[in-house]
Image (tube, rainbow, N blue to C red; front, side, top):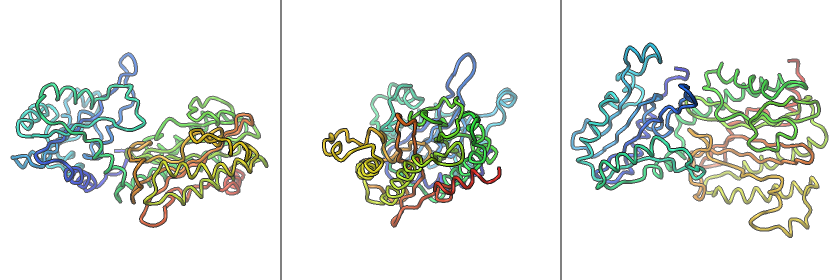
Amino acid sequence: MRYDAIPSDLFKLNRAAFAKQMKKNSMAVFVSNEPVTRSADAAYKWRQNPDTFYLSGIDQEETYLILYPDAPEPKYREVLFVRRTSEQIRIWEGKKHTQEEARAISGVQQVLWSENFENTLCLLMHYAEHVYLNTNEHDRSLGMAEATEIKFARKIQAQFPLHKYERAAPLLHALRSSKSKWELALLQRAIDITRLGFLRALRFIKPGVWEYQIEAELVHAYISNRGTGFAYEPIVATGENACVLHYVSNDVQCKAGELVLMDCAAEYANYNADLTRTVPVSGRFSKRQLEVYNAVLRVHNKARNMMRAGVVLHQLNEEVGKLMESELIGLKLLTKEEVKKQSKDRPAYKKYFPHGTAHFLGLDVHDVGKRYEKLKPGAVLTCEPGIYIPEEKLGIRIENNILITKDKPVDLMAHIPVEAEEIETIMNSKK
């Protein structure tokens, strides 16, 4: 396995916390993601359903999990199903988990082969009154692709139409938004690997290199240090490309005097870091670039210190907008008159800072969480203000990952260079 074994205590704890919220005589069913065809006989790289991984730790396709705390037969209170290895599978795909391995990873004692899932499900459905089914209820999801969970939910509801069905997602969102000590360790590992990639890139960047070559330097560091690869589609954007928020072409040559924005981070054991840094291609910021960079950094540092338990995320965004407003006036990008005339629904600063300040982070890069509820200790969020000036071909964003605690916030990326002088020093040290 590419990543170190995760203590099964994590998954036991997660299942117990979920089961505690279930209604009496309820069963919950979770399924793994299916491989998705790219074209011909090729498939996209497979990734486990985050909720199924969160509850089982099984990083393998054709995985099913049944939780039934009130099952009349104790052995069915937790049942895990994994794919059986055949000789053909062993030859073409490689070894799959044995039942003993799946038991050790998950902590579930009753482990059966996936071929037994349908029969076991039918047996238990006759006793359960409520059934929890899971779907992608992320508030940013557009639901354009039909997920495995939706197909499964439709099938089971057609087969057993008289049961009372419940939504698993709200329970999981509340649980996943607060990270345990094991999860924080996995996130920190992804962050530490990300740091190695960033330092490698700093020593590589110079006029004439291409965006995709920087991307290659980053992914080399991530994979060689046991990361899965990029946590999300990497953004390496030089010059005016940095003003395109989701730029992913990464196919332009970096020129002297430009900045290059890198929104790239590593994934480790399904947990995701999320880093953005903006650095000078020539190794030195110009006077104007430094003015804008330090303005973004001041907003970042103040916003980070505002990220505390009890704060509501959408209110945080509004407060950070006011900080940005002041900086934009100082940079002569906005006037006080423009601010006075601004619309409440479309504040003036949005012209140069069009996105939010923070999102939840974890098993998904844009992780599940309640943006309209008060932040609780254990939540991990990004802090990522930016200023984008297309007319100057200048875009700067700075992003770190912040842990909410009972006291002051903890910057999990405090060891990754961010001050302009430190970045310049590393870039000009002999490579």
